[in-house]
Length: 198
Image (tube, rainbow, N blue to C red):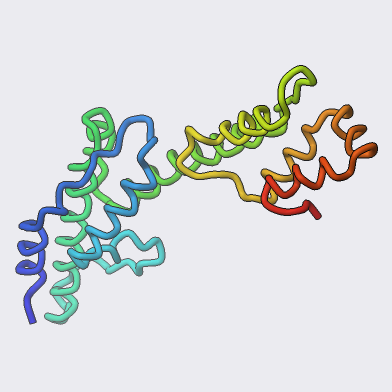
């Protein structure tokens, strides 16, 4: 069985080690996070990011040899993890976190900052969906495509039920009136959207 140092050297020699930098805006946070966790898993140091990781007491002269080895390994893994996190940050973020020695603190700060930003962008996307208005003077199908294209810049899309609900809420009263007089045309619209709304 190879040692941690040997496995780290093997991982460092692989092509996939070139990790993308986390940009200052956090637009690539999810991809960066997934790749980084994979990288730390290959190095066998992901455990140091666990918030429930028990604290190893400071060394004393009465400690057993095994406890000293555990303390040394933990310290080494934390330094390795912190170094790799800092290495993948832009210079401005690097300068902010250089003084922080605990990798869990760096990790949770980054997650909190960029996960909150992502939640904000999701709320903005939902708001854009619900504020969308249909125009009587434009073809309905073109307007539906415009509605669905609102989420195009986002790497993820809204859940299908939310898309359908928001579409139905934005249908102007004239289209509802048309449905009353010509139910067949509304059925065709529902089929084009992927099924009849419930």
